Length: 349
View 1 (cartoon, rainbow, N blue to C red):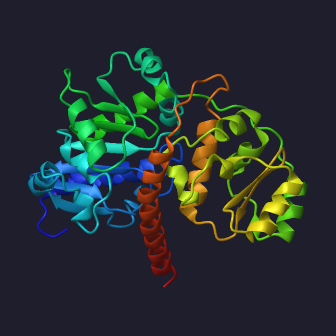
View 2: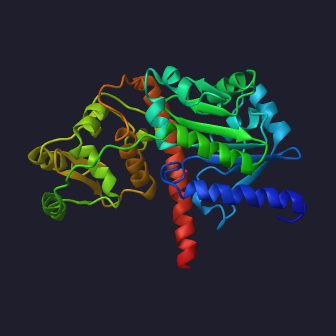
View 3: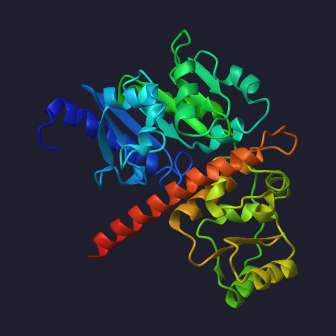
């Protein structure tokens, strides 16, 4: 951090503190999802690809990029994430926004609204008085940056962006203002989850003892199997891009609950390659080698569907959108998993 003035250092420390706080909240950030940035004297400081917001005060997760150069690439239709080695796939979005501080989170409450077909209309009353814009789903990278840049030209200048089937962006002049705005948006969009049904741990433990699966660390995941409404929602389509972290050939079938006897047949037929087993009325088992990021995404998925009512009209990702997102998420998952392994190794050493 040599050569950085005390003023800049203080602002970076504020961003690190805010990033760590956001990263430790599973209702806002799941594993390495989400990103933060600050623009200081022509430099865009942004969370590096694959880094974890929760690590912001423990490790150097921010990478400095020349802001004018980054914006120049974007004007040439060149994605900065393909130019700068450590740049996040969302770098272009952060760069085009005129605000000094930008936070992008995968807010569980926001996504529960953002997957609805009537989201824009429903959110008008909840966000009344805030300068906000709705962004219909577009892939991350240059497409999302273009949509955000266009929306940012509206008057009054918006500082809240609801991303369809994706998440939330809040922006402002400093970390304190943005943190307060994030808290206010979360308060307005808060949706209580349904009451969890009983989990059959006896059956799950018995099945796990015979197969290469274990119980998930987060009990909320079992709602994917025990809650009928959640199952109805999951069986009809893909809600948001991060679901593609579990399979390169993503289909709703992966998330459909199956009777106990069929779950064992799935295992035998596929040699235990399914990332998880959703056993109807019992609960969920996950592969022993499921990554930390995959486990966090599963928890986030359960939290989202537990906040969606059965009668809600849902806009699912199209097959083309799901396939496109799978390529991005696959790369991001590899990077995040590699970063986590390096950090874990360094701690042990």
